[in-house]
Length: 120
Image (cartoon, rainbow, N blue to C red):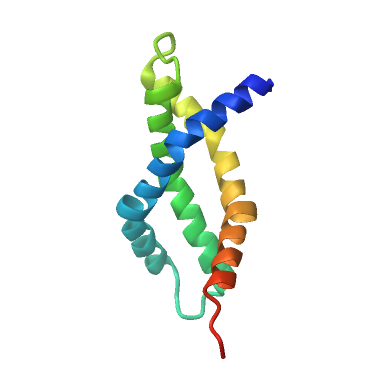
């Protein structure tokens, strides 16, 4: 990992972050909620519900975002588009699932709990 790679990733993030928000809010929100509802029962612990929802979100978002990143930023001419996309998705998935379950997801939930705290 070189510093230049990290800087390139931050430049790409300026494009990919809004795309991810739009996709999550307007394309994948309903399928994720629907799929989660099919897998849980009223007795399902809240932690398991959160893990299921996060996992489904990553399973939909990671291949889609990898597809967009491959089209916009990858040099896929030599290996072909599909091979480069699949490789990108496989490389991104472990980071995406870990990021969502252990860092970003809890941080965002904490932030929203803090901002939108109900006064009793």
